[in-house]
Image (cartoon, rainbow, N blue to C red):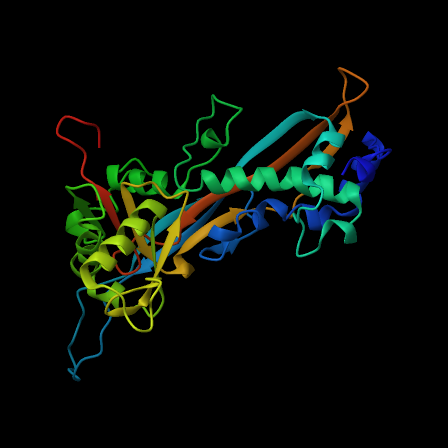
Length: 337
């Protein structure tokens, strides 16, 4: 290791030139770092601040012919605001220390370090760190325009958007997710290894609309802890199957259209069922105001400053019971919603 790193130096000029040369490759590194979530979400690019997507609903059915027939329905249009937030990162770095920490790792798209210019590898490593923090906060982030240092305050995550739709504190100041709307089910117990199968399966079978159940490709998002408890409870309840000795549960019993999606960033008092086509990660990636630069530090001769500006957000195309259902642990009496 020491022999390989000896004599390798980085300059602000070499790093800056690498960002310019490989901008198209580097700008997507934060997105690739979210890979575990990325494979279960749709992607919308070119969103700079806000776009309005409209959801149209209405009751339209063919019936037997009647000359003077007139329906009672109409078209109901609800707006969903697809919003990205503009954020930045300015960090002093010692690039040679970063180089030593990533030697032999693989942070670019499928290529090993020895096949990639080392300066590019350092740049990719820095971009990857941005993406990993976006992943960790993808459900729980809550935008706070008065805080500037943490990803948790940068944008609104999926859970935050859902909670706003439950409380009616969304853009249209209307409750869009509720038990009587059949897209919300409250639980009263913590999910443990003794009850996980009952709670997780009951949510799908008794807490979702019939139209949602008919969707051919649903994703059931849950925390890794809930998934662990589900597998343990299933094993205790039903034992091994000849074709599944490892108890690797990837779909819900009796519902092969429902993929179980355990993720480390999903809160443990929360579960979500929706198709991939309805859950979005939002990027811009098309404007010159997204910059990734490395400049010589103004404070010393050894460090450089890493500067990144980018847009990011999350959203659902619809929260209708036809395409989405939420499970939340019911707050204790006297606690906030």
